[in-house]
Image (cartoon, rainbow, N blue to C red; front, side):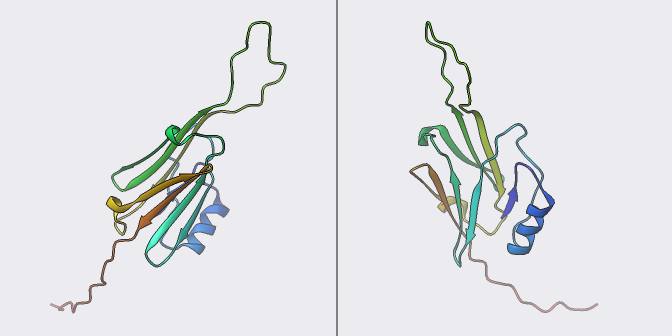
Length: 141
C-alpha cells in the first residue's frame, strides 16, 4: 500500500518510509483539496485506515477504488446564506473538499474491504491477500 498525501513533506515521507517500508509516498493526486488527516495501522491480516470527518454526514463521503488506488472524498459546506436583515460580520465556517488517495498495490483483497462510519470517523479495514513466497532454483546457462 502506498500513501498519496495532500502535501508531500520530506519529514513525512521519511517517517512513512522508516515506519512502514511497504508504504511509499506518491505525488499529490488531488490539487486544491483540504487536508484530510488519517491514521494508518497494519496488523497481521489487514491495513486499517481511520479518517476524521467532523460534522460531515456519511452520505457526503465517497470511497472508491480505481486501478488499485483507493480514494476517500467528501464535500462539506458549513456556510449559510444571509437571511433578510442579517449580514455576516465575520465568517469562519468552512467549506471545501477533502480528498486522499492510497495505492493499495497487489497484496490486498479489494473485494473484501469494509468501510464503517461512526461519530465522524471513517474506518476502512483492508484485508491483505495471502501470498505464499515462491522459492525456486534458477538454472545458470
